Length: 139
Image (cartoon, rainbow, N blue to C red; front, side, top):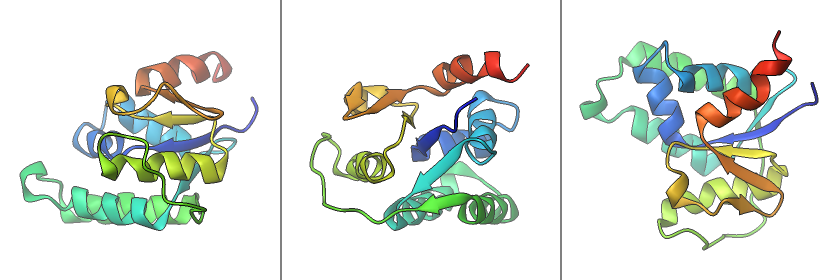
């Protein structure tokens, strides 16, 4: 299997934290395991930290710390080249910017309607679609 260059939207990370047996957790594990590569921008890391700490999500502090340390140690930090204004939600632009800088193959999100279907060479897909793409190669 060729290395996959991935960007993961915050909603996938939150779902991975809340549902340990769900597809988003599998996507997160795939993204930080070779040959895949997870790419982030500093603002994405900051959003991960802020959102995971929201009290209404009831994510244990220890789990938040583990997830964030795991991501920080296994992801590739890229620097944005410009500030994009493509999506309706300004907070989502950082994910397209990261995908652009990383030349990502896929942006994985649970909110596909917030993004274009493609951004340059990056396809926007759901966690289920990513699992469907890589599962034949895992056997």
